[in-house]
Length: 152
Image (cartoon, rainbow, N blue to C red; front, side):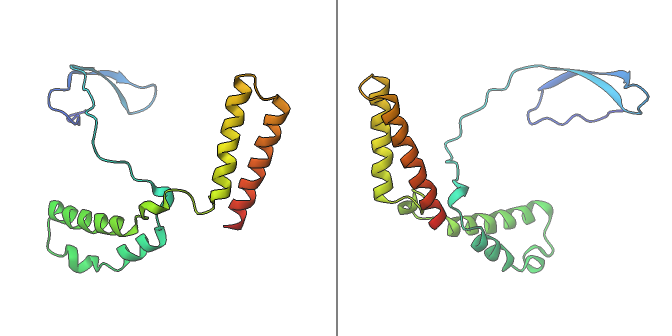
């Protein structure tokens, strides 16, 4: 018998009914109504870009913490706060600088090629550049990107 329904808001779910067993299983089906729609608030937190994170350093920083001593004698809530603080500190230290916004393999020459490719695309869409010319530019740019990635 179900005696607990977990939600993230009070009064969100109501009219909970058991509807019998599910086939030969000992599990039972439940029917419930969502009483009011929940609108998601837009968070002003920025999303982290984990593509540029140094996970080796992150693992090392969290591995250095003496967790037995840090969490000894603390309750669940206090332990969570300690863990969260260590996690956020390690995360801050592993962030790449703003100057590292572009990937390591991206050079100024390659950026110029990508810009030329975009201009060629716009020209092709407007009928100013032939399809064959645009296709050759795309292939050449793609090949240079592959080589640049392979070198880094």
